[in-house]
Image 1 (cartoon, rainbow over the protein chains, first blue to last red):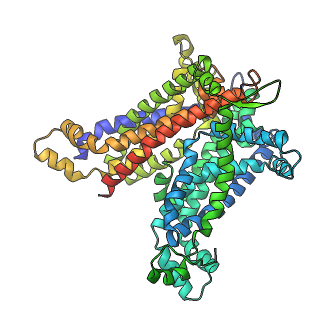
Image 2 (spheres, rainbow over the protein chains, first blue to last red):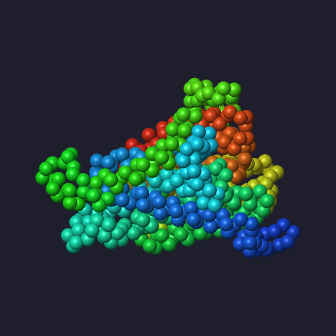
Length: 273
Length: 299
């Protein structure tokens, strides 16, 4: 029955391939075809030595690691507990983890900027003021980690929830406990290994979110990777496009690695957020 | 987490068993505390700021609806409507183009094609932001490869315009639609089609009377999801058009970076609140629809 649709299908797939591949191909051509000079790979070779490239990439990676660690530390115990001992809290957690979807990043950062202004305006005499200074440290802006954790909550919740649905946590924990494991042991050695796919999935989505995040960091005045690409775009168009192409390839590689690691089936469900 | 709390809300028989194995609600508390601070404070700041005005001379603050009124007038209203129009058109086009693409993939029996398209969609749906803008600038911008080689400039093409933005947004909206609608298309049973054809229905009739009604909740859900996604997008537009196209996200950013008159920050917060209301409406439509389509697929 599907055979009748064949010509129609190839037209659709062909047009889609054209639309999605042409900008990528054109970007590559744009970066290597220097007007008046012919083909040159300077745009790519210059990236490594470009001002701010390494520091901004490092900052983004550090932020990503901190965000992944924080979001997993907060979420894993919570979702496991929802399965085991506190099913009544389930709707609460579900709503809490969906709330960030209702606040667009630009509105969220408007709120954060306002809160950060309370520091100098109202709290300069209190010990809290120190906290405000510390979380806005230029070298490692904790405030960005806080924002990213919030933005990652919906994706992480869905990824972990899907992972937990696939295993019988209660039996796993009971078996571990019967064999004499303590609570932390049961969690770390029985539950977490079974959640490997979901944890990888959640980590990948968070990594992709942090590496590509622009709105919050730009408006709060920090310069992680996406902001650096934006700034470079003004002066060196070719290099900015070269970095854009590379960042897509890196994301693709990460996703394929993830699919290979076994989390592939959950992916589509969790990126729907 | 290791504490077993006595519970009063469970039956006595169960409680003896529960006490041993339940880590209890304590494990949820850090999450709730975190969200209250990191999400709650900014949320309170938005609402508080949107409804208050600082008196420049006395420094006193009073509450008023003036910011919200201002956010629905003049250039702010233009920007808000511009965002709604852009999101609605791109979402409709994205849904319209994403559906046949997803159907082409689902109806093909090639596992390889399916995996490739779904993986690509997963990547591309997240490929928003600055890199996307630059890729399109390199392709169709003023000095873009296609613009130059095809001489598009003379035919009046302008990437830095409303329709330019629509074209760029579709780059992540179509994959998003494919991801959203594929599970629903998978749920269409081959038997339904066979039953319809055996009863003398044509392919078109099958789609009109069987497939589309079953798909309707997922389609509508995908549509509002696409709308929300386009509505919230900021980085792509900022990197591509600056403020050539009036959009609410660009207006808020301008006000936040002090590019406008002092005292407009609270109008920016009022605009943010407008956005939250629109996004909230979108989610209020999307979540029940998603649940409804999940019922069909699990049945």
